[in-house]
Figure 1: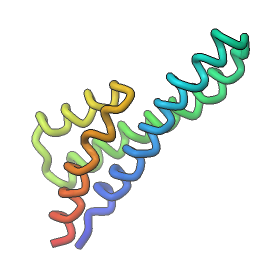
Figure 2 (figure 1 turned 90 degrees about the vertical axis):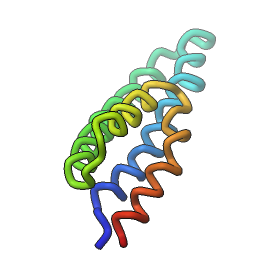
Figure 3 (figure 1 turned 30 degrees about the horizontal axis):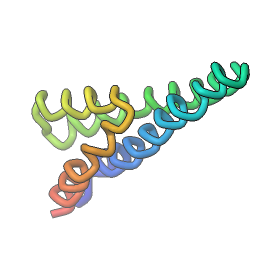
Length: 101
C-alpha cells in the first residue's frame, strides 16, 4: 500500500521548489528592476503557503514512513536552497516506490 503522505510530500516538494525559483528569479527582479513590489507580495504569499504545506507533509511523511531525523533534516535544508528540492526528488521517488511494496 502506497503511503499517501510520501506521495503528497513528493508533489508539494516540486511545486514549492518552482514557487521559490519564481520568487527569487522572477518576482524579486521585477520588484527591484521594474519597481513592481506587488509581484513579490503575490508570489511571496503563494510561496509561503506552499512552504507551510511542505513542512506539514514533511512531518507527516517522516512520521508515517519512518524516515530518520537526518533524512528529514536533509529534505528541510534542501528546501531552503533555490534548486535544493530538485536534488532530493529522486530520493523522495525511491521512498514512494518503497512505500508501495
